[in-house]
Structure formats: C-alpha cells, structure tokens
Image 1 (cartoon, one colour):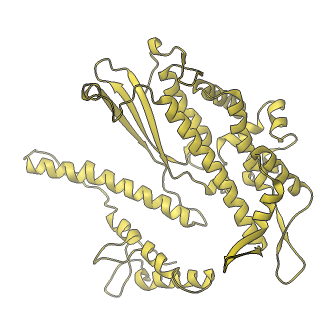
Image 2 (tube, rainbow, N blue to C red):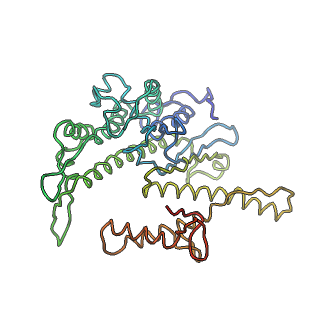
Image 3 (cartoon, helix red, strand yellow):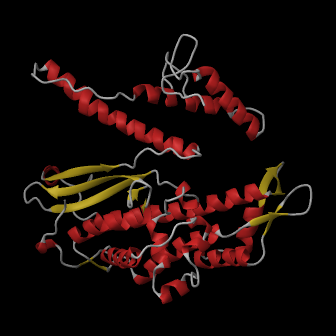
Amino acid sequence: RITKNKDVSREVISSDGKLVAGLEERVLSSNPLLETFGNAQTLRNDNSSRFGKFIHIYFSTEKGSIQGASISNYLLEKTRICHQIDGERNYHIFYQLLAGSEELIEDLKLDGSSATFFNYLGNSQKLDKDVDDLIETRQCLTRLGLTSEQQKSIFGIAAAVLHLGNITFESQNDEAENALLVDGVENVSLQQACDLLGLDAQAVQEAMLTKVLNIGGKSICKPQNVSQAEEKRDAFAKMTYSCLFLWLVQQVNETLQVNTPSTNSSASTSSMTGFIGVLDIYGFEVFDTNGFEQLLINYCNEKLQRHFNRHLFEVEQDLYASEGVDWTYITFNDNRPCLELIEGAPGVCIGILNMLDDSWGGMGTPKEKDVKFVAQLHKAYGSKNGKSSKSGGHDYFITP
C-alpha cells in the first residue's frame, strides 16, 4: 500500500504552468482515475479491471521516497463498450456522467435520459454511489493537473460514445437492402454525438452508410447494408473510447514522470533509484459468444501465466537443484500445451492462429472462409472424448 508523506504532498507548479498536487497525491490519484474509465461491474466483481497494466513506481534507495511512476497498459476490453452480458455493467464513467449535476447533464446532452435509454448500457442501471464516484473522478483529474476545459472535453467524448450507440439503421425497400439512418431520435443522436466530438454529422453519416473502393484510380462509393453500417458504428465508438483511454494514460504518465530515471541520467543517480513493478491483469472470460478479440485477450493472459510459471517455478527450482538446496518440489499446472494449441509449435501442432491465417487467405466469401476454418480445426484437433490419440484430437480442444 502507498501512503502519503506530508513533506511531498504539497501542491506544485508543473513545467507548463499548471497547479498540480504533490507527487504522491498524483500517484495515488492515478489508480482510481484509470479504474473509472477501465473498470466495470461484472458478475464476479463490482470493480473488475477490464484492461491490463504494468506500473513502475520509482523510489529513492537512500530516502525511500517515491521519485515518480509510469504505467504501461494493454488490451482494453473494447467489446464491453457496445455489449455486456446480463447482470454486468459498462465502464463506470458512463453511469457517473448520468449521475452528474443538471448543468453537466445538459452540457453533455444527456438530460431526460436514464441508463436504459442508451443501447450501449443494456439493461444496467446507475447506482447511488455513482454520484460520489463522479466527485472523486473530478478530484483525481484536478490533482493530475487537467483543467476544467480538459475535463469537459473528456466527459464530452465519453458521452458521445453513448449517443453513437443510439444511432440505428433500417433497410431500403429494394433488393439491395441498402441501409438508411432511421429518422427521429436516432438521427438526433448522430447530431449530438458529432457536436460533442466536433465532427460533421453528414460526413459521419456517409462514412457509416457507404464504403469507398479505389478501382483503377477511381473512387466508387458502395452502399452498406444494415449489418455493415452497425459494425461501422460500433467500430467508431470503440475507437473513440479506446483513444480517449490511451490519451488519459499518456496524461497520467506525463504528470508522474518527476525525477524518474532516464537514459541521460548519470550512473550515480540511476544507482540510487530503484523501482517496484506491479502487474495487474484481468482474468480469463468465457462468454456465450466469444470473438477474435476475446481469443487474443485470453491468449495474452496465457502467455503472461506461462512467463510467471517459468520464472517463478521452473527457473527458480532448477537453480535450487543446481545449488543443492534442500526443498520440496512445487508442482503447478503447466499451460504450455494450451499455448502450443493457439500459437503452434514445430513438430507438435500447426496452431489455431496459423490455421486462421491460412483459412482467410485466397478467394471466397467471409462465410465460406469461416466454414473452412472450423473444418480445419475439427480435422486437426477434434475428437469425440476431447482427448488426444493417434487418430487426432487435443487435450485442450473441446469438440462441441
């Protein structure tokens, strides 16, 4: 646990003239801020991290005081922005905005709207604690040196994502089934989102409803059907929120990089500075429908687990054995076969990712490529009892 030192908690002036909190106050404020934008309520945890991060906390080896910090993030769960399973919520910030003051709600064009009004929030509801959590979020932003205008822009971008989710499409009455924007509230949602993002609504509408193809040096606009338009809308919302989150991490790192060791620092200074590394990953998830993004998230977690197993169990115990240390061998579940199934291994198996590349190469419709991919998986790894044998199968591949 990081506790505050009264000597270094005073407010200071940053290099760009902003009044910010003391270093340790900023380090303490960074975590709840990123939790607001990167955590959500799940079935198992009311404040579950939906992104991974590695935190460097630098400290003086002489005085023991914090010198600075930096955060590396990865794999924000972008699918949650558009869809959540029953009983779970979207990211905390959306509900905090709906619990804000009348002035904030009016500025964000959220007046008269409840959580269930927004498609991206599903059937979830805001909670009483969201009011206090918004106050804390504002305080964290202020401590980190973000101005009122910057905070307004941050909240505006988050609110725009909610409005994007309320844009709906319908098919034209023709055989092509080209998509049209539904008039009424949905059209208003497009305008509100674009106002908050500073974009031209007509240009965004055209981007969602058409696809530009460059053929022979000429540009051809191809109309999109409803499914394609919805995919574009969701991709736009995911990209917008993801960029906002990355920008926040960047701002946090800039304000925490005080007295952190750099490549230009002297050897004596670096030798007097140590760091504590904290790795925070979110757990494996299995949904009713698991897409490519979820596969990559679980794959990354498997890689991290393998790294942990190797360096904590294998390498250390090999060292004990070589030095003749008397200890009891620790057994652990080795996930290497699971990784080999996903990424492949020479002489062992091709790997799911390599099969996916092979299936999606060449000619064919997306549906035909999907069928080819599934057929290859079952041919290589499928078995009736889910166990490997001479005839095929893999211990980590379950045949539906």
